Length: 226
Ligand SMILES: Cc1cc2nc3c(=O)[nH]c(=O)nc-3n(C[C@H](O)[C@H](O)[C@H](O)COP(=O)(O)O)c2cc1C
Image: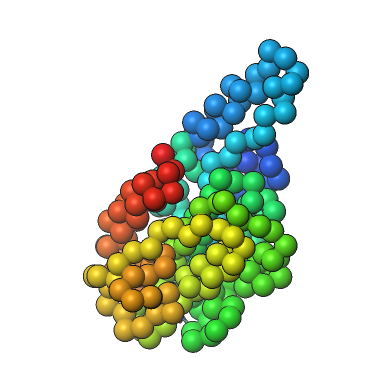
C-alpha cells in the first residue's frame, strides 16, 4: 500500500533546539515567555535555556494515525503543542529538546513481538532511541488499529512505544480504561486499562472525537500541559 503523503512540512521548532517539525501557528505561552525572558537587559540573561512545549510525533501508512495526530494537536492547541512531525523526519535528540511528547503509531505487523508498527517507528525505536535519555519528560502514546478484523492484536504497537520510551526514562502518562472498546486482546492492555489511547478509525471513527477530547483533558491534568 502506498504511503500517504506527509501531512506536515518539516520546519524548525519555534524556540531553539534542532529542527523537529511544523510549528503550529500560535507560539506556546512558554515559548513566548522564553522569548520575553531572553530579551536581555544584560548579556548574562542570554544563557536562559530555550523553553519548549510538546511535540506530537506520528507515523502513518494510510492516513489514519496522521489524522488523529492532527486532531490531538488541535485539541491541545498551540499554547501547548509546538510541533507536529512524522517520525521519519526527526530524531530522538531533536525530540528530547521538548518538555514532553505525544507519540502515535498504527499497528501493521500483526502479532509481532517487535517492530509492530511496520512504519518508520521500527527503525527509530531500535536503531536510534537508545542513544537519548527522556528522563523527566512526560510521554503519552496513542495508536490506530482495527478492533474487529484484528481484535486479538488491537493497537499492539502502543505497548511497544510505551515500553521503549519508558526504558529511556520517560514518565509515561495517558492510560485509559478499556470500557467501550470491542477488541478481544491487546498487548497494550494491562488489567482493565490500555497503556495509551487506541483509536479505531476503521470501525468506530465516530467515537474518535470524543475519545481524543477526553484524553487531551486527561493529559492536561496528568502531565500539567496547560
Ligand atoms: C495487513 C493489515 C494488518 C493489520 N494489522 C493490525 C493489527 O495487528 N492490529 C490492529 O489493531 N490493526 C491492524 N490493522 C489495521 C490498521 O492498523 C489500521 O487500519 C490503522 O488505522 C492504520 O493506520 P494508518 O492509516 O495510520 O497506517 C491491519 C491492517 C492491515 C490491512
